[in-house]
Every structure is written in C-alpha cells, then in structure tokens.
Length: 133
Image (tube, rainbow, N blue to C red; front, side):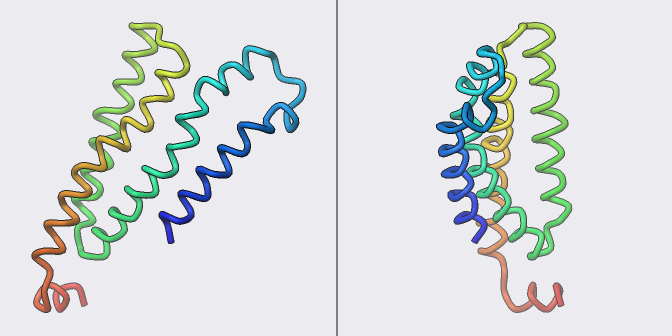
C-alpha cells in the first residue's frame, strides 16, 4: 500500500508542476525557475522514500529496530546533512544540488535496507517468530 501511495504522490507532484503558476500566480519568475529546476527531484522522491519506508517497517516488525535506526542515522546525519553543508557553504552549489542530496540520501539508504531485509527474511523461521511474540 505504501508503494501505491508513493506512486500516487509522484503523480500528484507531477500534476502540480503543471498548475503551480495558477495556484501561486504572484511568485517571482526566479521562484518558478527554481521550482522547475528541482521538479524532477520532488516528483521522484516519494517513490524511493516509499520503498525505504516499506523496508524499514518490515525490518522493525522483524525486530531490527536498532539496525533501521543506524541506517537512518547514518544516511541523514553522517552523509546527507554534511554533504548538503559542504555543497552550499564551500561549493556555492545551486538549489538543484542542495535538493539533490535528499534523493541521494534515500538511494544510499536503499542499499542497506534491501540487503538487511532480504537477509532477515531468509533467516526468519518459527523460532524467530516466537521470539517476537
């Protein structure tokens, strides 16, 4: 269901990109340009975020809450935030690159989520289920 909602969110953001000028008619042209520049990022972000959400919830349900926390913490606090700071403060990056850090973070987190989810499901049996109950 989360993936379906993620795809619907992508579609809604895609549709929003066509009518944003009608919803907010008084914005500066630079603002419209900035929104157009980052549109691919905010349109596709819900899909990969939904993918990670599903994996995170599965892992939490299987008793891997600490591992999920470590993946999220590493992705956000050790990779995403410092990278965004370096891009803006030292490289004077454009708004696109500042926002591009978010899907990059989600992509970085997707790999360990997928690996851990597959590994945990292979190891899961009745003994593991009894421990969770």
